[in-house]
Length: 133
Image: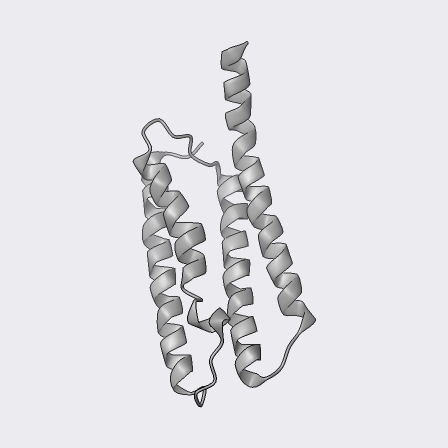
């Protein structure tokens, strides 16, 4: 499990990524000739909801178990994949095009997200089981 100092950096990073996504939307919206996409409009929400909020809650809950390096990396890769997939979907919607790879990237991102949570929960469940025995 990670130390609290490493976990406190994650919410700050995810806020930065959310702001960067918001700036990307604003700039892209200026050149989209009035065509919009909800995937581009709410691009900032993925890192905010999936990154900032869970890590911020972990830092606020006393006695919380913190994810290890592998669980955090897999989870963060899932958030990144979902965010990039949303960006691509927004670009494709605005351009009037589509791609199977964007859907594949979204599916992989969701899988990584769930696998990261699973890896995070395994040691917690083992600790709970050992305490009850």
